[in-house]
Length: 230
Ligand SMILES: Nc1ncnc2c1ncn2[C@@H]1O[C@H](COP(=O)(O)OP(=O)(O)OP(=O)(O)O)[C@@H](O)[C@H]1O
Image 1 (cartoon, rainbow, N blue to C red):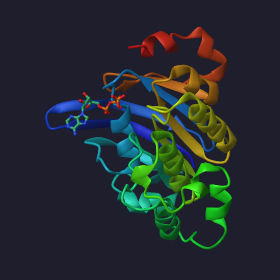
Image 2 (cartoon, rainbow, N blue to C red; image 1 turned 90 degrees about the horizontal axis):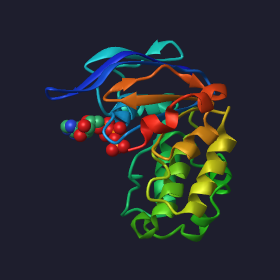
Image 3 (cartoon, rainbow, N blue to C red; image 1 turned 180 degrees about the vertical axis):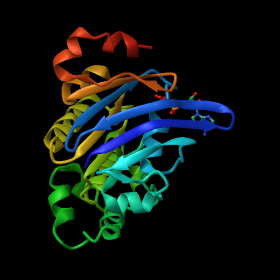
Image 4 (cartoon, rainbow, N blue to C red; image 1 turned 45 degrees about the horizontal axis):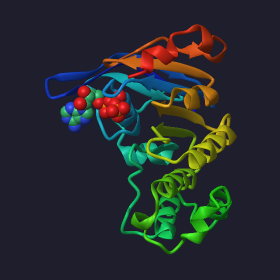
């Protein structure tokens, strides 16, 4: 699915967080969204998910204006997210977390769950545990599985490596690499090398503004790393 963000502004009260953000992400493209703490990356992701409404501007999905569309309808349309902090349902079991997402999209019994869970060998071992008992890395894998059982066409990832041990980071990197081309991916990351290793293009965000999109061939010639380091 192609995503077009046009002149998006967002405010929290009187504070302007997003400033005239425009960005086009082609169908199947993986774009890295980089920037310091507080730059506005999560706010932009929430505008795409639909949990925040922009003050002005438009968001188009395959040409359809979805700016005012509610989150569950965007989800049905093919948007899925792995939010910052994972936000798994801690009181529910691993199975229940996955089943709830799959069921909401009509994929409870068509083989999608089995096919998805195969990608995360740790999850079947934890199947009946409550999600709150899982380690951070295991919860992150559950959050990915929960997103993927919806068979998304757009995957919005908000700092998937945050607070995760290196072995799981590598597994998450392999997973994202395997998804490339099959869905549009917007990858918010502070871990610049991880993001640039996966993305085909990158944008940096600074005080609510995004840079022009930088193609992979130009990653080394840009100031991407320094513009993000804290
Ligand atoms: N609910 C809120 N009310 C008021 N201000 C907020 C709220 N949420 C975020 N902000 C502010 O909006 C700005 C952008 O925050 P946002 O979380 O989008 O940044 P970010 O680039 O994702 O940073 P981080 O890497 O820390 O998650 C920050 O100045 C933050 O303090």
